[in-house]
Length: 343
Ligand SMILES: Cc1ncc(COP(=O)(O)O)c(C=O)c1O
Image 1: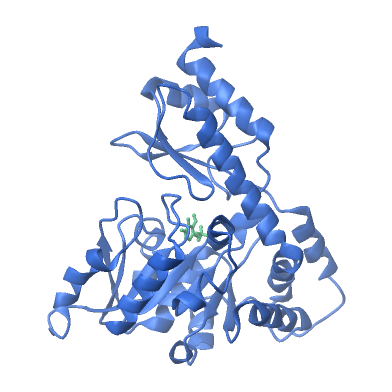
Image 2 (image 1 turned 90 degrees about the horizontal axis):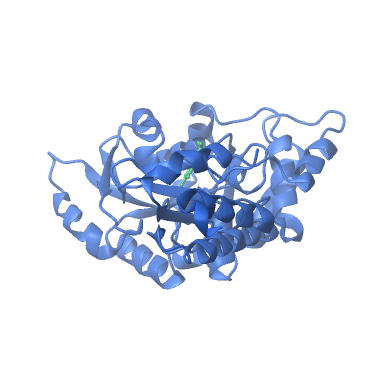
């Protein structure tokens, strides 16, 4: 089955699988004191500069650990109303920390200083949770990508207001590939304090990383990771995947390919009069509204999700293994369903 439902539907890139196999040598020290975790840490440092690296089993776990590092129970976290931490994590970050989320409406998935400013009025009032973190996703849940200028402006605004910036980078590779830049320029150089660095959506079998740039946030991080049940005893098998991902630009090969497939899909469907693309296709997601009657028949051929049941907006995701043939077949299927006589 090929699907346009999620980059999570894709399998494991062969080079990643090979790296897991290679990591299966004899014995090594457990809980991240092994040689591969050490090597992966050095690789992250060579890319980002000074960074504390922790690992997590999934994106929710990485966000929980990262956000714990930034908050006390009376704090609040400002995020987009589409944020994964708000909509799709079953309240995990809130449940495990005690803070509240302040979701703000973001038409294109991106927070700006203008959107956030009114919320800061609660500052210093003992009756209100105290804003401490701005959490953004890059690429966003709507497939849009913050420019470096937007990121820098947001981080400057945050720091001027004593807020940390957390970046949910479940799809950071897609964003960095789309921006045609490097990881450091797109994160720590813009002022990001802490981030979740995605792996699973870009060809890994299991594992995400928490990258901490701000010294203040490093202090208790190991304890938060363990307490959040994210410390893997056999961490070498996660570390091995990140080494394979970051070495030889595998991350870029996979992410830029997925982005290209999304652009191809968007270009092809934009020629169908009955289809309306609803958000800028910056990374590997395409959002669209198609005739309602076409949704189910198309889902039967290529599974995908309805993003918004009210508007019947749908989301199609491309991944590292989506082929141009998959895209063209998908488009032909859509055309055939919408107007059988056109094909
Ligand atoms: C923006 C974003 N953050 C985090 C995640 C990680 O989620 P999971 O815990 O399912 O790995 C996802 C997955 O869909 C996501 O889209």
